[in-house]
Image (cartoon, rainbow, N blue to C red):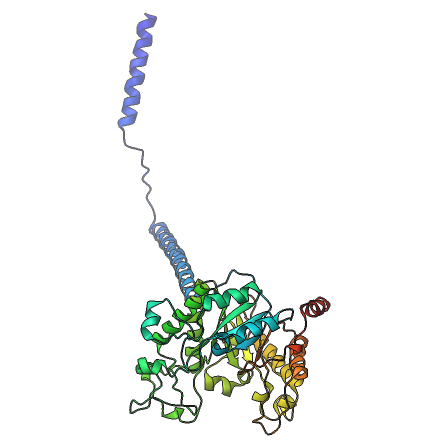
Length: 425
Protein backbone atom coordinates (compact mmCIF):
# COMPACT_ATOMS: atom_id res chain seq x y z
CA UNK A 1 0.00 0.00 0.00
CA UNK A 2 2.83 2.37 0.92
CA UNK A 3 4.57 1.56 -2.34
CA UNK A 4 1.47 2.40 -4.36
CA UNK A 5 1.09 5.65 -2.50
CA UNK A 6 4.76 6.54 -3.14
CA UNK A 7 4.47 5.80 -6.88
CA UNK A 8 1.32 7.88 -7.08
CA UNK A 9 3.07 10.81 -5.50
CA UNK A 10 6.01 10.56 -7.97
CA UNK A 11 3.52 10.43 -10.86
CA UNK A 12 1.76 13.54 -9.69
CA UNK A 13 5.07 15.41 -9.21
CA UNK A 14 6.21 14.48 -12.75
CA UNK A 15 2.94 15.75 -14.26
CA UNK A 16 3.24 18.95 -12.30
CA UNK A 17 6.83 19.65 -13.52
CA UNK A 18 5.86 19.08 -17.16
CA UNK A 19 2.96 21.44 -16.75
CA UNK A 20 5.29 24.11 -15.37
CA UNK A 21 7.64 23.75 -18.31
CA UNK A 22 4.90 24.13 -20.86
CA UNK A 23 3.49 27.28 -19.33
CA UNK A 24 4.47 30.74 -20.60
CA UNK A 25 6.53 32.92 -18.21
CA UNK A 26 4.43 34.90 -15.90
CA UNK A 27 3.79 38.42 -17.04
CA UNK A 28 2.62 41.14 -14.80
CA UNK A 29 0.18 43.54 -16.30
CA UNK A 30 0.41 46.97 -14.73
CA UNK A 31 -1.98 49.73 -15.52
CA UNK A 32 0.51 52.62 -16.10
CA UNK A 33 -0.60 56.18 -15.86
CA UNK A 34 -0.02 58.48 -18.84
CA UNK A 35 2.49 60.40 -16.74
CA UNK A 36 4.50 57.21 -16.01
CA UNK A 37 4.43 56.21 -19.66
CA UNK A 38 5.68 59.68 -20.66
CA UNK A 39 8.47 59.50 -18.07
CA UNK A 40 9.62 56.05 -19.23
CA UNK A 41 9.57 57.23 -22.86
CA UNK A 42 11.73 60.22 -22.00
CA UNK A 43 14.17 58.01 -20.10
CA UNK A 44 14.47 55.70 -23.11
CA UNK A 45 15.08 58.63 -25.48
CA UNK A 46 17.69 60.09 -23.14
CA UNK A 47 19.49 56.76 -22.86
CA UNK A 48 19.43 56.35 -26.63
CA UNK A 49 20.78 59.90 -27.10
CA UNK A 50 23.59 59.39 -24.59
CA UNK A 51 24.50 56.12 -26.27
CA UNK A 52 24.61 57.95 -29.62
CA UNK A 53 26.84 60.68 -28.16
CA UNK A 54 29.22 58.10 -26.71
CA UNK A 55 29.42 56.33 -30.06
CA UNK A 56 30.08 59.61 -31.90
CA UNK A 57 32.78 60.52 -29.37
CA UNK A 58 34.55 57.21 -29.89
CA UNK A 59 34.33 57.57 -33.67
CA UNK A 60 35.59 61.18 -33.50
CA UNK A 61 38.53 60.15 -31.32
CA UNK A 62 39.43 57.29 -33.62
CA UNK A 63 39.19 59.61 -36.64
CA UNK A 64 41.38 62.22 -34.94
CA UNK A 65 43.97 59.55 -34.13
CA UNK A 66 43.96 58.37 -37.73
CA UNK A 67 44.35 61.95 -39.00
CA UNK A 68 47.22 62.57 -36.58
CA UNK A 69 48.97 59.42 -37.77
CA UNK A 70 48.46 60.56 -41.36
CA UNK A 71 49.95 63.97 -40.55
CA UNK A 72 52.95 62.34 -38.87
CA UNK A 73 53.45 60.19 -41.95
CA UNK A 74 53.55 63.33 -44.09
CA UNK A 75 56.14 65.02 -41.86
CA UNK A 76 59.57 64.25 -43.26
CA UNK A 77 62.14 62.99 -40.77
CA UNK A 78 65.86 62.47 -41.23
CA UNK A 79 66.71 58.80 -41.45
CA UNK A 80 69.59 57.62 -39.32
CA UNK A 81 72.92 56.37 -40.64
CA UNK A 82 73.97 53.66 -38.25
CA UNK A 83 77.71 54.20 -38.46
CA UNK A 84 80.19 55.71 -36.04
CA UNK A 85 80.87 59.36 -36.79
CA UNK A 86 84.34 60.81 -37.12
CA UNK A 87 85.42 64.33 -36.20
CA UNK A 88 86.58 65.54 -39.58
CA UNK A 89 89.58 67.79 -40.17
CA UNK A 90 90.11 67.86 -43.89
CA UNK A 91 91.22 69.52 -47.10
CA UNK A 92 89.77 69.83 -50.58
CA UNK A 93 91.27 68.08 -53.63
CA UNK A 94 90.27 68.66 -57.23
CA UNK A 95 89.62 65.69 -59.47
CA UNK A 96 92.74 66.59 -61.47
CA UNK A 97 94.86 66.41 -58.32
CA UNK A 98 93.17 63.21 -57.21
CA UNK A 99 93.85 61.61 -60.59
CA UNK A 100 97.57 62.48 -60.66
CA UNK A 101 100.67 61.29 -58.88
CA UNK A 102 100.55 64.47 -56.83
CA UNK A 103 97.77 62.99 -54.74
CA UNK A 104 100.19 60.51 -53.20
CA UNK A 105 102.59 63.34 -52.29
CA UNK A 106 99.69 65.05 -50.52
CA UNK A 107 98.76 61.81 -48.79
CA UNK A 108 102.35 61.48 -47.60
CA UNK A 109 102.30 65.05 -46.29
CA UNK A 110 99.08 64.38 -44.40
CA UNK A 111 100.66 61.55 -42.46
CA UNK A 112 101.36 62.30 -38.81
CA UNK A 113 99.24 65.48 -38.98
CA UNK A 114 95.82 66.10 -37.50
CA UNK A 115 94.34 65.92 -41.02
CA UNK A 116 92.09 62.89 -41.33
CA UNK A 117 89.83 63.65 -44.31
CA UNK A 118 89.76 64.76 -47.94
CA UNK A 119 86.95 66.13 -50.10
CA UNK A 120 87.37 64.96 -53.70
CA UNK A 121 85.58 66.22 -56.82
CA UNK A 122 83.30 63.48 -58.12
CA UNK A 123 81.01 65.63 -60.23
CA UNK A 124 82.94 68.80 -60.97
CA UNK A 125 82.03 72.38 -61.84
CA UNK A 126 81.83 71.42 -65.53
CA UNK A 127 79.28 68.72 -64.82
CA UNK A 128 81.69 65.88 -65.57
CA UNK A 129 82.06 62.81 -63.36
CA UNK A 130 85.71 62.19 -62.64
CA UNK A 131 85.75 58.39 -63.04
CA UNK A 132 83.99 55.64 -64.95
CA UNK A 133 80.73 54.38 -63.51
CA UNK A 134 79.10 50.97 -63.65
CA UNK A 135 75.54 52.29 -63.54
CA UNK A 136 74.08 51.88 -67.07
CA UNK A 137 71.71 54.87 -66.65
CA UNK A 138 74.64 57.15 -65.83
CA UNK A 139 76.84 55.68 -68.53
CA UNK A 140 74.10 56.41 -71.05
CA UNK A 141 74.29 60.13 -70.24
CA UNK A 142 78.03 60.02 -70.89
CA UNK A 143 79.15 62.49 -68.23
CA UNK A 144 81.72 60.12 -66.72
CA UNK A 145 85.43 60.46 -67.58
CA UNK A 146 88.76 58.95 -66.61
CA UNK A 147 90.19 61.99 -64.83
CA UNK A 148 90.69 59.62 -61.89
CA UNK A 149 91.75 56.40 -63.64
CA UNK A 150 91.60 54.09 -60.61
CA UNK A 151 89.05 55.33 -58.09
CA UNK A 152 88.98 52.05 -56.16
CA UNK A 153 92.75 52.07 -55.77
CA UNK A 154 92.68 55.70 -54.64
CA UNK A 155 90.00 55.02 -52.04
CA UNK A 156 91.98 52.07 -50.74
CA UNK A 157 95.12 54.20 -50.48
CA UNK A 158 93.32 56.81 -48.36
CA UNK A 159 91.44 54.30 -46.23
CA UNK A 160 94.63 52.37 -45.52
CA UNK A 161 95.98 55.55 -43.91
CA UNK A 162 92.80 56.10 -41.93
CA UNK A 163 91.64 58.98 -44.14
CA UNK A 164 87.89 59.67 -44.36
CA UNK A 165 86.90 60.33 -48.00
CA UNK A 166 84.10 62.70 -49.00
CA UNK A 167 82.62 62.82 -52.51
CA UNK A 168 81.89 66.39 -53.69
CA UNK A 169 78.99 66.58 -56.14
CA UNK A 170 78.24 69.91 -57.80
CA UNK A 171 74.48 70.11 -58.30
CA UNK A 172 72.56 72.85 -60.06
CA UNK A 173 75.42 74.46 -61.99
CA UNK A 174 75.94 71.89 -64.73
CA UNK A 175 76.89 72.95 -68.26
CA UNK A 176 77.38 69.37 -69.47
CA UNK A 177 73.91 68.03 -68.71
CA UNK A 178 72.43 70.87 -70.76
CA UNK A 179 73.94 69.30 -73.89
CA UNK A 180 72.00 66.10 -73.18
CA UNK A 181 68.86 67.42 -71.51
CA UNK A 182 68.25 71.06 -72.39
CA UNK A 183 64.72 70.67 -71.01
CA UNK A 184 66.24 70.33 -67.53
CA UNK A 185 67.96 73.70 -67.70
CA UNK A 186 67.09 77.27 -66.79
CA UNK A 187 65.54 78.62 -69.98
CA UNK A 188 64.49 82.03 -71.21
CA UNK A 189 61.11 82.77 -72.79
CA UNK A 190 62.49 82.05 -76.27
CA UNK A 191 63.73 78.60 -75.20
CA UNK A 192 67.43 79.52 -75.10
CA UNK A 193 69.50 78.42 -72.11
CA UNK A 194 70.53 80.92 -69.47
CA UNK A 195 74.31 81.41 -69.27
CA UNK A 196 76.04 82.90 -66.20
CA UNK A 197 79.06 85.23 -66.17
CA UNK A 198 81.40 82.24 -66.34
CA UNK A 199 79.67 80.81 -69.39
CA UNK A 200 78.00 78.10 -67.32
CA UNK A 201 74.44 76.77 -67.59
CA UNK A 202 72.31 76.07 -64.56
CA UNK A 203 69.75 73.35 -64.00
CA UNK A 204 66.16 74.28 -63.15
CA UNK A 205 65.83 73.04 -59.52
CA UNK A 206 62.20 72.10 -60.13
CA UNK A 207 63.26 69.38 -62.60
CA UNK A 208 62.89 66.21 -60.54
CA UNK A 209 64.37 63.99 -63.26
CA UNK A 210 67.63 65.74 -62.48
CA UNK A 211 67.16 64.94 -58.79
CA UNK A 212 67.20 61.28 -59.73
CA UNK A 213 70.41 61.81 -61.71
CA UNK A 214 72.14 63.29 -58.66
CA UNK A 215 70.81 60.51 -56.43
CA UNK A 216 72.22 57.84 -58.75
CA UNK A 217 75.65 59.49 -58.65
CA UNK A 218 75.55 59.61 -54.85
CA UNK A 219 74.50 55.98 -54.64
CA UNK A 220 77.36 54.99 -56.95
CA UNK A 221 79.78 56.80 -54.60
CA UNK A 222 78.36 54.89 -51.64
CA UNK A 223 78.76 51.59 -53.48
CA UNK A 224 82.38 52.42 -54.27
CA UNK A 225 83.17 53.03 -50.60
CA UNK A 226 83.11 56.82 -50.12
CA UNK A 227 82.44 57.65 -46.48
CA UNK A 228 80.28 60.67 -47.22
CA UNK A 229 78.46 62.38 -50.08
CA UNK A 230 78.60 66.18 -50.09
CA UNK A 231 76.48 68.39 -52.35
CA UNK A 232 77.71 71.78 -53.55
CA UNK A 233 75.83 74.46 -55.51
CA UNK A 234 72.60 73.30 -53.85
CA UNK A 235 70.91 76.56 -54.77
CA UNK A 236 69.35 78.82 -57.34
CA UNK A 237 71.62 80.94 -59.50
CA UNK A 238 71.55 84.61 -58.50
CA UNK A 239 73.67 86.13 -61.24
CA UNK A 240 72.65 88.97 -63.52
CA UNK A 241 70.10 87.97 -66.13
CA UNK A 242 68.24 85.42 -64.00
CA UNK A 243 65.13 87.61 -64.21
CA UNK A 244 64.87 86.44 -67.83
CA UNK A 245 64.53 82.79 -66.78
CA UNK A 246 60.99 81.47 -67.10
CA UNK A 247 59.69 78.71 -64.84
CA UNK A 248 56.47 76.77 -65.45
CA UNK A 249 53.53 78.22 -63.54
CA UNK A 250 53.14 75.04 -61.50
CA UNK A 251 56.77 75.37 -60.38
CA UNK A 252 56.41 78.78 -58.79
CA UNK A 253 56.71 77.55 -55.20
CA UNK A 254 58.98 79.07 -52.62
CA UNK A 255 62.67 78.68 -53.54
CA UNK A 256 63.63 77.46 -50.07
CA UNK A 257 60.81 74.91 -50.17
CA UNK A 258 61.97 73.25 -53.39
CA UNK A 259 65.65 73.25 -52.36
CA UNK A 260 64.73 71.72 -49.00
CA UNK A 261 62.62 69.06 -50.73
CA UNK A 262 65.54 68.24 -53.01
CA UNK A 263 67.90 67.86 -50.04
CA UNK A 264 65.36 65.62 -48.28
CA UNK A 265 65.04 63.49 -51.41
CA UNK A 266 68.80 62.95 -51.64
CA UNK A 267 69.05 62.46 -47.87
CA UNK A 268 66.61 59.54 -48.01
CA UNK A 269 68.54 57.92 -50.84
CA UNK A 270 71.90 58.30 -49.10
CA UNK A 271 70.51 57.00 -45.79
CA UNK A 272 69.23 53.92 -47.62
CA UNK A 273 72.86 53.32 -48.63
CA UNK A 274 74.04 54.02 -45.07
CA UNK A 275 76.44 56.73 -46.19
CA UNK A 276 76.79 60.10 -44.44
CA UNK A 277 75.38 63.12 -46.23
CA UNK A 278 76.33 66.81 -46.14
CA UNK A 279 75.63 70.04 -47.98
CA UNK A 280 77.69 73.15 -48.61
CA UNK A 281 75.81 76.40 -48.06
CA UNK A 282 76.60 80.10 -48.31
CA UNK A 283 77.76 81.48 -44.98
CA UNK A 284 75.90 84.68 -45.74
CA UNK A 285 72.48 82.98 -45.53
CA UNK A 286 72.94 82.59 -41.78
CA UNK A 287 70.71 85.19 -40.18
CA UNK A 288 69.89 86.83 -43.53
CA UNK A 289 66.33 86.37 -44.78
CA UNK A 290 67.11 88.18 -48.04
CA UNK A 291 70.11 85.99 -48.92
CA UNK A 292 68.26 82.85 -47.85
CA UNK A 293 65.25 83.59 -50.06
CA UNK A 294 67.48 84.59 -52.97
CA UNK A 295 69.46 81.35 -53.22
CA UNK A 296 66.80 79.06 -51.73
CA UNK A 297 68.89 77.87 -48.79
CA UNK A 298 67.18 77.94 -45.39
CA UNK A 299 69.97 77.23 -42.91
CA UNK A 300 67.90 75.80 -40.07
CA UNK A 301 65.58 73.79 -42.35
CA UNK A 302 68.49 72.21 -44.19
CA UNK A 303 70.16 71.41 -40.87
CA UNK A 304 67.26 69.06 -40.19
CA UNK A 305 67.88 67.12 -43.42
CA UNK A 306 71.58 66.25 -43.45
CA UNK A 307 74.24 64.68 -41.27
CA UNK A 308 76.60 67.65 -41.68
CA UNK A 309 76.06 71.30 -42.55
CA UNK A 310 79.10 72.87 -44.18
CA UNK A 311 78.72 76.67 -44.29
CA UNK A 312 81.33 78.42 -46.43
CA UNK A 313 82.35 81.14 -43.98
CA UNK A 314 85.49 82.36 -45.73
CA UNK A 315 86.40 85.80 -44.35
CA UNK A 316 86.83 87.05 -47.92
CA UNK A 317 83.13 86.35 -48.60
CA UNK A 318 81.88 88.93 -46.10
CA UNK A 319 81.40 92.56 -46.95
CA UNK A 320 83.00 95.40 -45.06
CA UNK A 321 81.37 95.92 -41.68
CA UNK A 322 80.01 92.41 -41.18
CA UNK A 323 80.10 91.31 -37.53
CA UNK A 324 81.27 94.83 -36.71
CA UNK A 325 84.58 94.17 -38.49
CA UNK A 326 85.80 96.89 -40.85
CA UNK A 327 87.46 94.50 -43.30
CA UNK A 328 86.55 90.86 -42.46
CA UNK A 329 89.27 89.32 -44.64
CA UNK A 330 91.90 91.01 -42.49
CA UNK A 331 90.47 89.55 -39.26
CA UNK A 332 90.21 85.78 -39.79
CA UNK A 333 89.66 84.83 -36.13
CA UNK A 334 87.01 87.47 -35.46
CA UNK A 335 85.19 86.76 -38.73
CA UNK A 336 84.98 82.99 -38.19
CA UNK A 337 83.96 83.50 -34.58
CA UNK A 338 81.26 85.96 -35.65
CA UNK A 339 79.93 83.64 -38.36
CA UNK A 340 79.75 80.65 -36.03
CA UNK A 341 78.15 82.70 -33.29
CA UNK A 342 75.46 83.58 -35.83
CA UNK A 343 75.20 79.90 -36.80
CA UNK A 344 74.62 78.84 -33.22
CA UNK A 345 72.01 81.54 -32.70
CA UNK A 346 70.18 80.72 -35.93
CA UNK A 347 69.98 77.01 -35.15
CA UNK A 348 69.04 77.50 -31.50
CA UNK A 349 66.09 79.69 -32.46
CA UNK A 350 64.62 76.88 -34.56
CA UNK A 351 65.56 73.99 -32.29
CA UNK A 352 62.66 72.12 -30.69
CA UNK A 353 62.85 69.39 -28.06
CA UNK A 354 63.46 66.05 -29.70
CA UNK A 355 64.08 67.49 -33.15
CA UNK A 356 67.15 66.51 -35.14
CA UNK A 357 69.87 68.97 -36.17
CA UNK A 358 73.02 68.31 -38.19
CA UNK A 359 76.58 68.69 -36.99
CA UNK A 360 78.07 71.99 -38.22
CA UNK A 361 81.37 71.55 -40.05
CA UNK A 362 82.50 74.85 -41.62
CA UNK A 363 84.63 75.48 -44.67
CA UNK A 364 87.60 77.73 -43.82
CA UNK A 365 89.70 79.91 -46.09
CA UNK A 366 92.99 78.42 -47.27
CA UNK A 367 93.71 81.00 -49.98
CA UNK A 368 94.62 84.65 -50.35
CA UNK A 369 91.82 86.85 -51.72
CA UNK A 370 94.06 89.26 -53.60
CA UNK A 371 91.11 90.41 -55.69
CA UNK A 372 89.80 92.36 -52.68
CA UNK A 373 90.74 95.94 -52.02
CA UNK A 374 91.48 95.16 -48.39
CA UNK A 375 93.01 91.73 -47.84
CA UNK A 376 95.89 89.94 -46.17
CA UNK A 377 97.95 86.92 -47.22
CA UNK A 378 96.65 83.68 -45.78
CA UNK A 379 99.29 81.33 -44.46
CA UNK A 380 99.90 79.23 -41.39
CA UNK A 381 98.96 81.94 -38.89
CA UNK A 382 95.65 82.79 -40.55
CA UNK A 383 94.67 79.13 -40.92
CA UNK A 384 95.40 78.42 -37.27
CA UNK A 385 93.44 81.51 -36.24
CA UNK A 386 90.37 80.25 -38.11
CA UNK A 387 90.69 76.75 -36.66
CA UNK A 388 90.99 78.18 -33.15
CA UNK A 389 87.87 80.26 -33.73
CA UNK A 390 86.02 77.04 -34.64
CA UNK A 391 87.03 75.43 -31.36
CA UNK A 392 86.35 78.54 -29.30
CA UNK A 393 82.86 78.68 -30.83
CA UNK A 394 82.09 75.20 -29.54
CA UNK A 395 82.51 73.30 -32.80
CA UNK A 396 84.88 70.37 -33.45
CA UNK A 397 85.19 69.90 -37.22
CA UNK A 398 86.47 71.91 -40.18
CA UNK A 399 87.49 71.77 -43.83
CA UNK A 400 90.07 73.94 -45.62
CA UNK A 401 89.43 75.18 -49.17
CA UNK A 402 92.22 75.99 -51.61
CA UNK A 403 91.18 75.65 -55.26
CA UNK A 404 94.76 74.93 -56.38
CA UNK A 405 95.29 72.45 -53.54
CA UNK A 406 98.40 74.32 -52.38
CA UNK A 407 98.52 73.63 -48.66
CA UNK A 408 101.16 74.54 -46.11
CA UNK A 409 101.12 71.35 -44.06
CA UNK A 410 103.12 73.01 -41.29
CA UNK A 411 99.86 74.81 -40.45
CA UNK A 412 98.47 71.57 -39.12
CA UNK A 413 99.26 70.02 -35.77
CA UNK A 414 100.86 66.63 -35.39
CA UNK A 415 98.59 63.82 -34.30
CA UNK A 416 100.20 63.88 -30.84
CA UNK A 417 99.69 67.65 -30.48
CA UNK A 418 96.09 67.39 -31.63
CA UNK A 419 95.34 64.54 -29.22
CA UNK A 420 96.89 66.46 -26.32
CA UNK A 421 94.83 69.58 -27.08
CA UNK A 422 91.69 67.47 -27.53
CA UNK A 423 92.26 65.98 -24.07
CA UNK A 424 92.64 69.45 -22.56
CA UNK A 425 89.48 70.85 -24.18
